[in-house]
Image 1 (cartoon, rainbow, N blue to C red):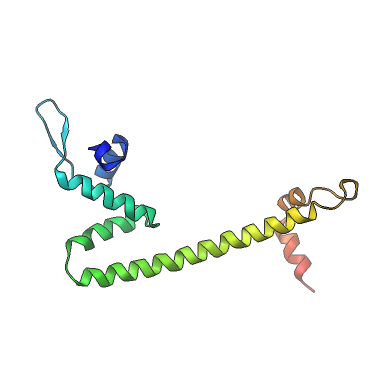
Image 2 (cartoon, rainbow, N blue to C red):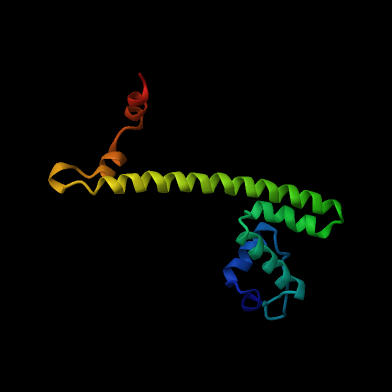
Length: 135
């Protein structure tokens, strides 16, 4: 089952503990006997994770997937929220990249005329930065 779903066995057990995957029946020897739908559920979970959804969100998506047309509206709303969250995260990452690029650019000064601006920025007190911005 793990190979079919392209996950490791620990992932299956974790999904079971989280309630995302129903606990399978056991064979006489104690082996887990998953039903064919379990592979589809695990693949659904992995695809949703690839889209940025957390397991709590995926639990809701699994419930919505069982419902009717109203599930589409709720899924759309969750997706719109996820896009907004991703936009914020992308903007934060772009701001971090730009700040780091500015610091790297200052490294172009002759070595004997500077200290490492990256280390100076990292070790500075953020409150000092706030005071510098004040008139």
